[in-house]
Image 1 (tube, rainbow over the protein chains, first blue to last red):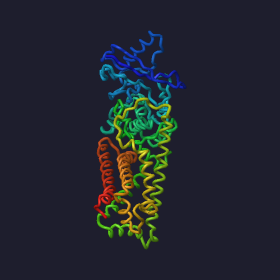
Image 2 (image 1 turned 45 degrees about the vertical axis):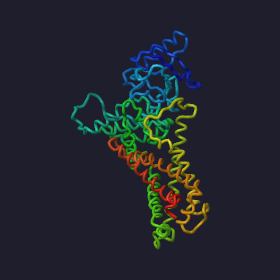
Image 3 (image 1 turned 180 degrees about the horizontal axis):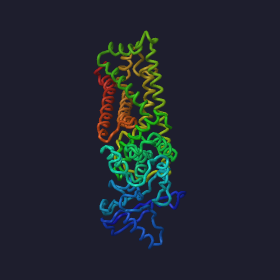
Image 4 (image 1 turned 30 degrees about the horizontal axis):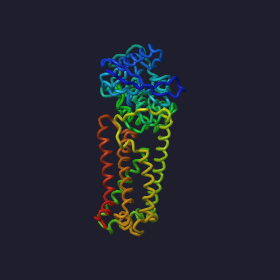
Length: 248
Length: 212
């Protein structure tokens, strides 16, 4: 395959940045998107140019490090992570535009790499439980209804990649926060902090300069883990409950 | 946003019901308009209920607009102009969701015109009148096609606003579950369609000579 790439190049956080065009020949349709970027970087290195910086780690779709916006869609045209996207999803001769997540809360470190530390601070603000951990308890020590367990698990599959923020027209992190609120709120271990959790996490995401949620739904539509949009309603229910109890 | 929006949607449905009385003739329409002034009388002073209603509506509109401006500003701050995407594709969002902000501004301007036209009658195409029925019939005659056109466009903007707004309000108030998401959206589409058609019928009936 022959591919024309338009890649966002930005030397550092304060650089203005621009799109640079590169042509790649003999791209295999079986390459993952990141392998294709590896090929580009080898070529750039041989030509004494600065390789394109991009985040990646497991390349198995479970770590959430590798998000970029491809042709205007977070993680590209397939509903999976960028590392699990393959070049067979594109056509020979395609021009592909690659940009970093764009949000004030996710400042660009370099090229396609952004700092997602804001997510860590939201988790620090309330995404934890105080139940003692240690050895695994007996499986039937805390009976949990199957639908609740499933709902908690679905929400817990969030890998914190940030695609929801990248896709949101308001650059809101609501789906990420809602996934954690739903995950912990469905389980008995999450109950002691349930009322304060949602208030603290919302306050933190506001402080990080994420936008407000207007229920447009682009977040859930691009989520590689399929976090359902109804987690946001769950968060709102928890928030109403907290406010009516006078928490926050 | 959701609570004030809900108040305004309920008001719109009542308003639409009143408008459709135009098809029962001048007496019914004018009588209905007059009865609104006497609602609650003599418990309340004359037009008392109406003024309480107007204050609630105005407060709702102001709070709704304030919340909208805050969301708009936060969105611009969260993704400043210098950080916009070079290429951005819509994935799943509805057309209606694009129209919320500019559509909202259009609706606000229309409401001002609408009150000046049909409530205070300061703007009176086709001649002023004490009868609400005559104001309506005068105002939407074919020669004032531009008044009708503005009305039609604004009502369509209201319809789109309700399509996303009702869904969004239900989600904000915590009603959304994955199993219900389709139904909530259907409710939003249904109410939006009913309100749009219900508001379009009276002026278009006047323009096309069905009511005179």
